[in-house]
Image (cartoon, rainbow, N blue to C red):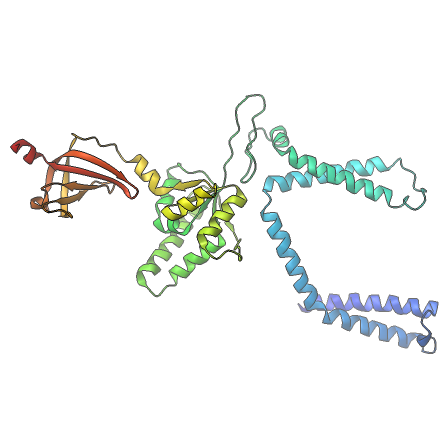
Length: 367
């Protein structure tokens, strides 16, 4: 801050000096005609320096706001668009400069401004064309490359196949705390980049600092999972600091960010799943994936299950498979604490998962 104040003071003093020099030499302001030129110049330098120093904090505040606006705008633009636009702008401006070389400079009024106008116009056209044709340019200069997150899906020229690209996968708080996301990524079933919004990190931090020991452990587990994904797994992780202050709910912010980035929300929250689908946002639900990869069990199959507790109905016992699937055993209460052979009678798929109904094989033999 002090260095900036010194720079501002020097700039203000220099401007004051040039202004005083103009007034003294031209005598355009009568009050200074009776004063010694050195007095006028010294006063102008001091006033200019003071004005610029006092305005430093306002200049800094304005620059910070401008920077925040620019960064927020750039975050909405895919990286490939920015790169293509920059290349197109540079190429267009070079072409514009070359095109203006034969133009005469002595044209009245517009002669001095015409080359600048032509250069800027051709540069803008070059940037616009490059952004629109970014997939073609990417294919020409890097045939094996893939378009980044947020870029539209192009076609691989010469093969007739639709090109693939990795859209961003936006993680919500529940799926990070759950922890299974790290194993899924490690197994190679989920491609990046993974996006962790700043408001999700803030929520994790808040949970990790909770006075409730259970919540605190869950929050710390979520932070550990993120560290594991970032450091141990070979998949890009992006932290996007977009808070959407106009939106209060974290779920609504996730859906808005997913629509902005043209990505998918990764969650195991049933309500968020439905809200996102209603707004046209794709969802990857970890619970649905787990249910999909569970082994298929058909009525009549036999298995061995350890009965661990009572069921809701009289005489029922409850056991679990290795993947967590609950098995309700009719007449299994007498076998609590034992492993018993059972025969599947029915399989019920619910929103919470799969339930299997069975009866002991000894009962079957008795019948």
